[in-house]
Image (cartoon, rainbow, N blue to C red):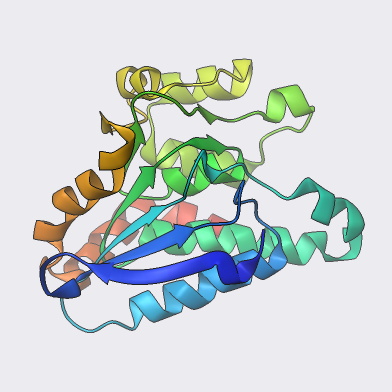
Length: 224
């Protein structure tokens, strides 16, 4: 994925809703992409006054997870990459505003984990899977990854996800408690903005306090 294909825009009342859009095909993560995410979160966090955040992708993919080709060709940078990726999830989990993952298509592996770091997940109703494919890849889920999932999602859904590799459709994810709502493809982002926009004026200081009360151990484990 090309880092420059991550875009930050503003919408909602008084442009208080920041929207980060991934637009690079499968929207996979490599080190440059994760660095760009951190830059955008720096910019979001530096916003003064009312704030909320929506993240989304384009086309068929929210994010198809790690760029395994990049990892295979950069083994000497894998530790740095994974540390930075974990920190990204921790920053999202503890961000001092309400966040929504507007899942426009497939969210696999690291992409699914990114959605779990948000306060709310909305999904496309007609197509696209939320999936943790580590079992099929022969790669065990890491402890920090599991704690991130447990921080936000029902334990029974997590067990099914990691122990069977089940691909949750939007309706499946809604029934399992992974998704909070499902929508037609052209309404996923607008539904996210509609829900979070009126909450952008909530106290960011209190939100930060509450999130850290809820998730301090997970955020610390992720390295933020």
